[in-house]
Length: 95
Image (tube, rainbow, N blue to C red; front, side):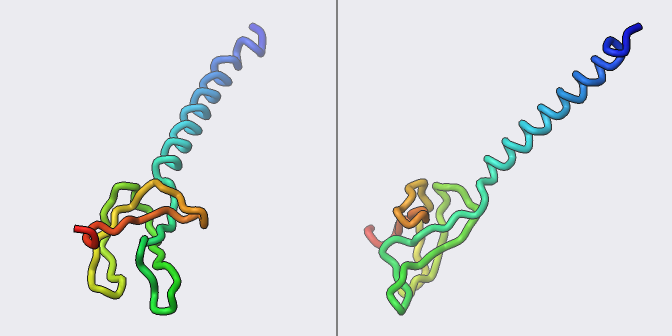
């Protein structure tokens, strides 16, 4: 029996395990998305800089933050701003 014929099944099995493992790692990393920085629109700190919120939550999530006028609700969006942060739109201010 040839050495190539004897090792081919082991090689293909290892290659399949490597491919499946790589795919699962890629899918989990993409799903997690990492930490995102959100700018809370129309909100500013006492020194005038925008209020930022760091989170791992997905777009569409509603958060509550105190931005100087009491607790307000903000919806996290997929819209990326020119400074690289994502927009969080106020929900209670315009109703």
